[in-house]
Image (cartoon, rainbow, N blue to C red; front, side):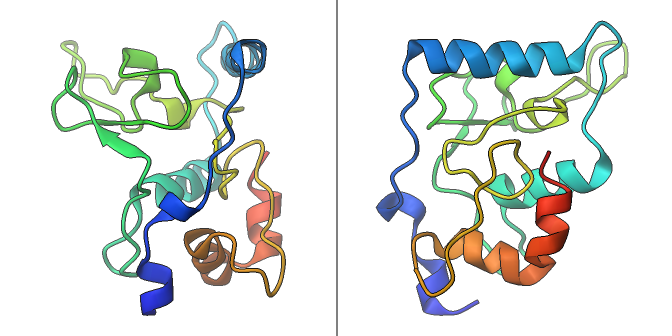
Length: 153
């Protein structure tokens, strides 16, 4: 990954949703889960994970908005979405006392990202030739836009 792509996302201003917008997207996420705990498809979750956590093999660092959880050690949450460090907002599945994996934020069939990154319901492709978000462009080059559009529902 080039030096340009290593720069932090801090230059990219995340969406700052108001209370009503946050309530709307939260309701959409909860509704998409349904009563049977539906989960996102594997390609969607992999793209979301790549967008949030980066990838050491590709030398893509984690998103600068990814925060260490103080409530759930070893876990992370998004510092830009405004939801805070709660059980439902964790970006990784954790082992529960019964041995099962927890339902994490990336499992929701519909979930929004303040940076509109690949894999998320509100994904917005970057404009060609515009260096708005080097991380997003790197992921688009890695997976291909058609694949990302198909798997960002």
